[in-house]
Image (cartoon, rainbow, N blue to C red; front, side, top):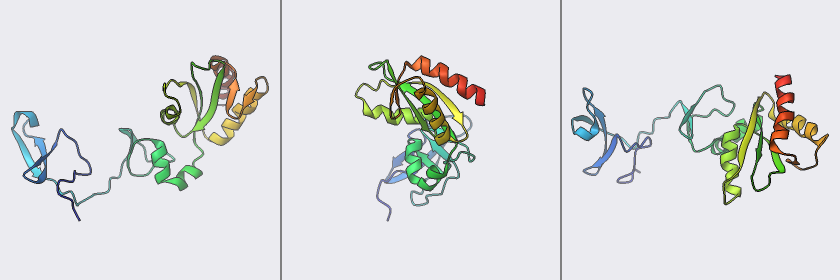
Length: 184
């Protein structure tokens, strides 16, 4: 049952207003704006939740070709992955990334993600300073395999603890640039 005052699913404060107990959609007429007061008003049906055919992550349109594609609006790829767990598990395409924190300049993390920037935003929750920096990311067709290759390559000359390596981020970048640019 519809709740009184429930916002439309595609709510936008610039075009939707709650007036007289109902939601209304306002759109400009002849180049005017909602602010001028000269606009056309249409009732918005809150009940009709028309399924979108688009995927949007953090305000950005995602192509249907993306391995995690699932129509809807998501805060991050992580949220989309939980909504579409079977696609996340099966998706091999993605990125291998290097990140580090200025608090620990002699350590860097080599990891994999569907999208490195998205991974960084969720990784930032682990530190009160939100100071991790994405040094580089490499698009790869098989992220688990590419991450394993990167780890093995760095372990030949540097100590590690799981995905963390005792190596400056720029040195790791130089090594992995050579590897990934040679293989792509």
